[in-house]
Amino acid sequence: MFIVAHDGMHGILFPYNLNINDAIAALALILYGGLSFRDLREKHYLHHRFTGTSLDPDFHEHNPNFCFWYFRFMGKYVSFLNLCRLCLLILIIVNLFHIHWLNLLLFWALPLIFSSLQLFFFGTFLPHRHHQDNQYSLGAIKSLHLPILLSLITCYHFSYHQEHHRYPSLPWWQLPHLRVHNMG
Image (cartoon, rainbow, N blue to C red; front, side):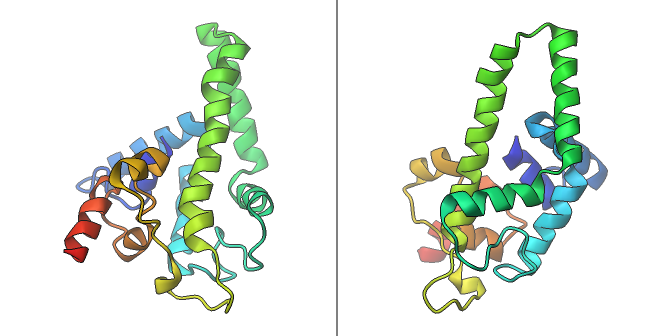
């Protein structure tokens, strides 16, 4: 769901009608975790515009360990309002559809947490870590060079991260083709 929303942030879900594009992306984020499309899109634009700087909401300039950076990252994207929306969504699902809380935990909450860890690890932590010299440029964003199937499984080709930053208007499923095309 987050990948759908991510493509929506770049206007490529339904490029001929941005209202439909944004509505699909907003619905995907609400269903994914009660997240605000407007807030995430604004922060994602900052990430692309100021990648690797103190103005980048995804970046931690002191290159901390994975856990510290993850919690700081999540704190920037998940607000109290997001948590309230998520609680409301859970209450609606439980009461309207009579779904047991254990099923919500096993089939929604845990996958949500694991997918956020996966997205952060493959989409932020690995590609955006600074190196020893602490210098940053677009060339410092790393693609992970995973085999195509592993790249798909790990994070819908976010392992082609430099390609995504260079060509943000391409959908996730075209990134491997871009890499093969540019290498060939």
